[in-house]
Length: 288
Image (cartoon, rainbow, N blue to C red; front, side, top):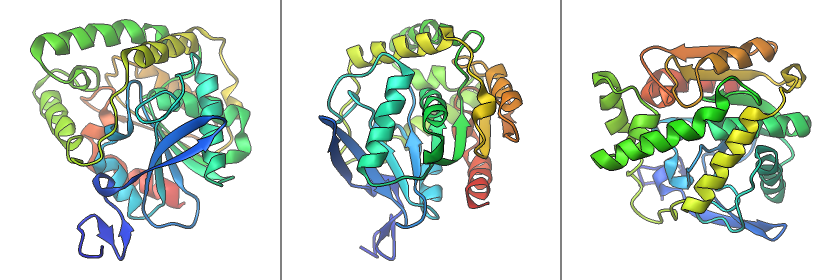
């Protein structure tokens, strides 16, 4: 094992080599992958709309796993996890709590992106003692301005991608200028680095139910975010078409003591485009 490039002293630190495990709780079997050194508080990754275990950027997850125990999981009804996708963000948060508790943890750090960030907010609001530190990227608050338009943008970009035979994330996550197109291609290629034990793709029904949940979140009443007292790091690109960048600023204003990074000339996937700049900031934040 120690000769494997994805391992250090027997510890797997490369996401492409992390085995897929399962845990069953409440009649649902959750698929998950873990890597990095065990012990200490794990960093649980909350994934985006339509994503499975195979959608985490190794340039984000690998360097974090060199220092921290990292756990990524498929939400209920997604990828290799059983059951049906809930039609509310709050129910997804309840599932995440069930999963974390089933693994035996009572304190975690949360790294979230997009829909995952909405789930993380709902989880922290209901179970504040479970989360020590919170990273919210490419996301927005309940009732956020134009949040309910995510579905329209998503369907439009999926159509554009289909017509050009590209991955929808190239349109949804990145600007369509030369810099953005380059970053998009590199990101999509990185997601293919894992070749064995790939996850099952999300079903159309599950995808549509997730979009319905996001729309409900966008049209919900505003929540008192001052209740979030955990150290919080917020990041996005300056031109997020999916979850408007102003909503990251809104989160920053309303979560006391939070830190905000907005990356220039980038979209929803700003942290992926700027992974080499973002990861050291995230590591410093988690180590504090």
